[in-house]
Amino acid sequence: MKKLTAALVAVLALTFIAAGAASAQTSGSAPVSAAAAYCVQEGGVVENRIPWYGTNGNDPLQLSGSRDFCRFTSNTDDSRIYVDLQTLYTQTASLAALAYYAEVQPGSCEGNPASCYCSLLGGSDQFGGTTGAGGGWVKREAIDVVLEACIFPDLSTIDSWGLFYHSAGIIRGIDLNGILRYPDPYESAKKKLDAK
Image 1: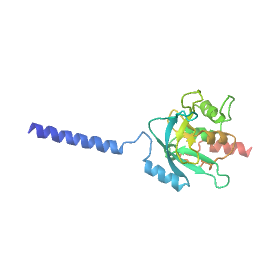
Image 2: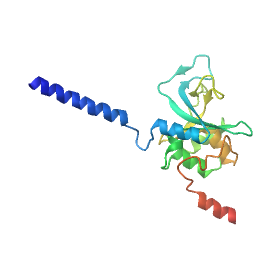
Image 3: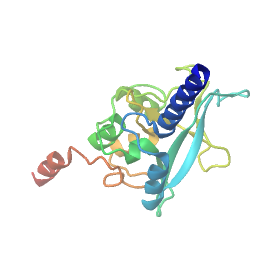
Image 4: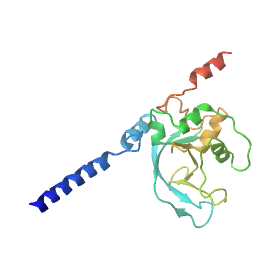
């Protein structure tokens, strides 16, 4: 009887653990299917990308994990901007969304301007530091095989080049204002400046 009770308790515990794991999400994250559906609804294309190190060399190394991005392409000039699904779909503030909305002017530094801008904002798109080995979020047979994505400490993520160009008022892909579900907190301040 004790073995049966212990077995029953173990089965129930495993059932609850499995159910919890199946429905568990990162704090503030949305189910991937809802975020993916939103991406498509807004005119984007979902791309699953894998991190690779050493893409500038002959022997790149695939790293663990993957991330889903929404790619938005301009109908007029075919430019693109990428944002990860969680950053796109969340209704709470994220550092990537705030960086996009703030349009902070780039500082000065050397090297890749988009990567530099990302770093100045507190993010990173570096794979292996500044060694020149390169790296990024890879999708074979894609328009942009290696994506340089700026990842912030809260793990929100946006295309480094799209972010950099937006700081100069240049829209790549589409304007994410009104597409990101977290609204622009600077909108009223911008309108006051425009009215002057």
